[in-house]
Image (cartoon, rainbow, N blue to C red; front, side, top):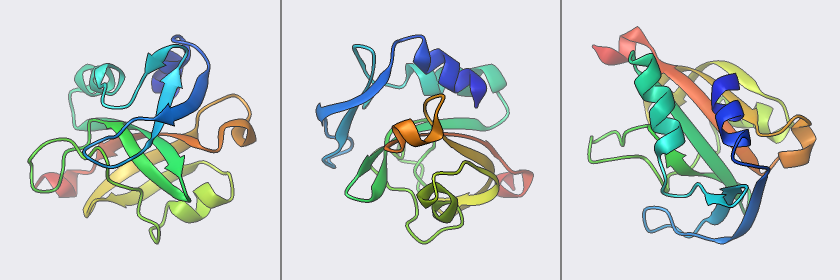
Length: 145
């Protein structure tokens, strides 16, 4: 998680500014400095490639109470591409911690697939960027069978 946040922070401060659709879904435009993150996969792919063992990464932007995947290396369950434009499960085990402004680390289900996962808000002060969420996960061995 720290590497993903560090890499993004090197681009500049995070902010939401305007709109930028992801996979046909209207979403807030997530920037780090002047770099638009929506539909750009360099950061999340770097994390995935460096690990090489099923690691995935995601940037979410909050929109009307939902967290939308605006950049991700998580595949769609049917294998037809990236899961951009999908939302964090609004009734899943992760969202309760997120709604309290707390990070989540542990077992979680992402689009029906079990992962060992971590979710954290971007920024030094958890409460300062509650609309920008980062996720780093390692797919569990049971999901590879």
